[in-house]
Length: 232
Image (cartoon, rainbow, N blue to C red; front, side, top):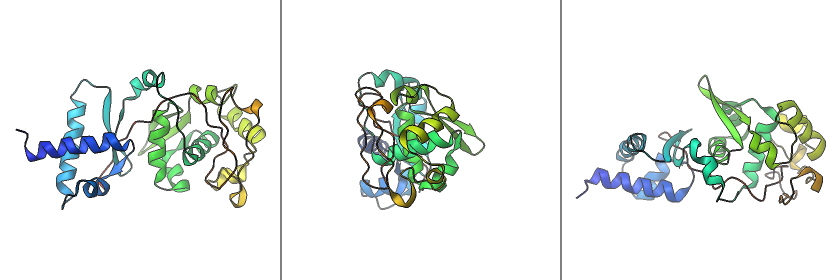
């Protein structure tokens, strides 16, 4: 019969799997109804060690101050074949900032949009739209070839992607400097024309300052995996 600690590990695994997004130790402790966060921290470390020593396509990852269960990057392309893209306005906004400022440090992104940056980076990596490489104590973020293909951009060169965002989608340097791809005073950038988006892509109409200017692709990488977190 499993011990109490083992049972806690399994319950944490179930929560992270069902959440589909990074969760903090505080959030996990509340969800479990546990009186103390310290056993939850220990169980999370045990869960991480279990996945590290297991032959599996999943991993427990640390993202900012949160934990998540997600696909290993090696297996993301395989999953893309059967899972549709789902991208919220906040995710589009984050992707636009990364595309414009690349190579961009994750620490700078966090200063621009707050702690949500860590969760969005996990999501975009899971979709295969950005790459994150270690850079000192943070990560350096760049877009991938998949990003260019999904949004109908003919080049993967950062300067040409910036030109595309400015000329085709109405993004301005001033809006990118403030961390609001929607432009000055919270107004949305114009939705791209059919020529600016790949065939069948769903455009995101201007509605609020949370909306990003990039169109959302109709078909593409699947549901983002979770990422691991650190204690809150």
